[in-house]
Every structure is written in C-alpha cells, then in structure tokens.
Image (cartoon, rainbow, N blue to C red):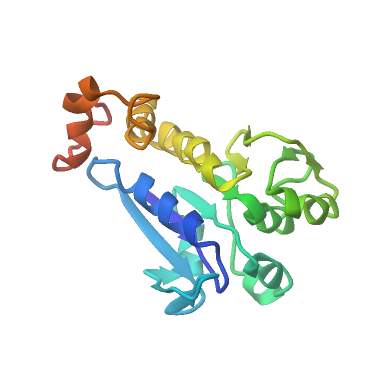
Length: 205
C-alpha cells in the first residue's frame, strides 16, 4: 500500500513532519509513504529544504493521497497546470487534507456537495467554492476527509490507517504520541514495542 503526501513551496512544516512520522509508525510489509512534489526540492514556510521522492502524477496511483497546508496552497490552486496533474479517484483512493489543503480538494471538485473543515483563516476562501465549512477537527464523507488545525492530524491519519490497514493499528499509532499519564501509560510499553519491530505481513497488532 502506498500513501502519497503532496507538498509544494511554502508548506507548513508541522503538517509534513507530523504526518510523515505518524504514517511511518505502521509496521507492515508493502507499506510505503512517499513525499511528492513538482520539483526535486521544496522549501517549507520556515525555509527548510525537503527532497521529494517522486512526481505529482504518482498520486494518481496511490492508495491514499494527503494534501498538506501552508501559504503555498493559494499559489497552487491558481496554477491550472499543477491542478491538472491530479486525476484522483475517490471511489478507489482515500483522499484527505489538513487545514488549507482543503482548498486543493475543493479546486479538484472533491468537496462538491459535502461539508468540510479547515483552518479558521482559510474558512472564507473555502466557502468561496460553495463549500459549507463546519467548525470541527475532522470531517469524512466516504473516502474524502478534511481536518482543521495541525494537531487534528491525529484524526486524519488515524482515519487513513484504519481504512488502509485496520483500527488496531490506527489506535496504536495515535496512542504512541499521546502525553504520558493522559492517554499513554507505562503499562502500554509491551504493545507499543511493536511499532519498532520489523514489518510483518499481518494487518493486525
């Protein structure tokens, strides 16, 4: 199974790194996470240079496609050539966004007739597409999901893992990053150790 994370210049740093970290905690064979972009390297909002693993067109064959956010989303949705590289299929692919990444889903027509969520400063821009924006951390309609607020990635990524693998793996990955004493406890250690084991074919934990 392949998960594609789409980046671009001026992307929000935490959106990539948190997503990348959580997704790579899944330890099953044939699980691959790839960062895609239109260039070999992209600069984050804080000018961190990130090397991409492949071109945007790879997203069209991925099992899941995730769009991160940042100031660059406005530039990307205005670039018809960039938008035109995506031929996504919501019947066969899991497709999601974090914060202003929802603007890309809207531009692609994937949010038509659906409610969605996004970062508060993007609400008006998303509404301009005719989308009803709801103040919730995560909203899913079938294979389309939107999350609002960087830490809402836990719901987005949990949803992706549950759909592609199973709920047990989704719960384990999200629990692994919870604060000790709040959601994560010391007696969880034996089960959490499976996150660092060699990948297995089984889709269970």
